[in-house]
Amino acid sequence: MVEQIINIERMEHALTLFGSRDENIRQIEQTYGVTVLFRGTDLKVSGEAEAVMSAVRCIEGLLSMVEQGEELTSQNIRYVASLVEEGKEQEVRGLNRDVICITAKGKPLKARTLGQQGYVDAIRQNTVTFGIGPAGTGKTYLAVAMAVKAFRAHEVNRIILTRPAVEAGEKLGFLPGDLQNKVDPYLRPLYDALFDMLGAENFQKYQERGNIEVAPLAYMRGRTLDDSFIILDEAQNTTPEQMKMFLTRLGAGSRAVITGDVTQIDLPDARRSGLVEAAKILRGVEDIAIIQFTEKDVVRHKLVQDIIRAYEKYYSDSRRGNRESRGPSRREEHRDYRERK
Image (cartoon, rainbow, N blue to C red; front, side):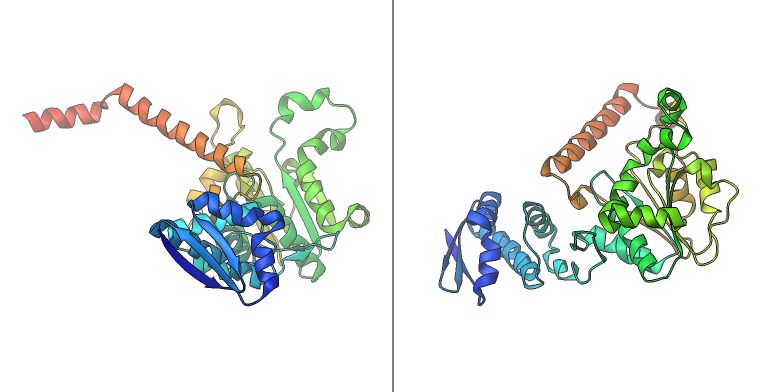
């Protein structure tokens, strides 16, 4: 049993660190199996040596967030704990350094993980940015936030959001209304993000003026999109031909962000994904960034991270089992035969 002391000079920082009814400290204690007590200005952490060292590093990382004015949540405590495992907890100081935009409700929006910060920086610095990763990592939401920021700063004249309506092949004909009514359900996540940033009234006003356009990918064909911030969402469901068509719409003064999750491809008949192919073809091209998110960047419920890990493990085990059940390939058999000869 060892003890380590952390000095916290400002009482408000200690209160934020502990959280309502000490829930933050209890989460740290449960994560590392340590005991945390606060006396005066000193925080005492006791337990097994290695656990105490990790808990102290986690607490110091969280305190750096508190000093930047951040409220602590269960999610960012888990995230800092994951950084401690990788020895990267010092990098948390690079987070939350600036506000991306202010939502319609007056809430400042910032990157919440290193992956998100890298994504935001890439959008700032490149004309085309790919954000690839699992659900819940903020790919679409942050892209919309950056689009709204650019629009408010008069860097672009229009925001264009689009996504392929893959399911529409069978289901659109059974939905009521005209074509726009039929595709609206597939574009709902984009509407939701814009409502959060602008408010429903402002969104309606800008849409009527033509400053904001939300449309299925098929509407992009034959157009040249100048002075626009263009977001292609659910890009894993584009074909290679659709992806090339979209990328070649880019006009003067425009930026594009392409988001998708390659583990959720819904294309029929096992068709190739345009997102997967584009990420291979365009890697290394100047002014194009490809950002890969992981389950550590998930900012939804903790269960989302656990679900993603469980699926990854299942598919990894399945692929390994399939390779073992198939036995050696014909090439491997020929190689073994030559070696025996």
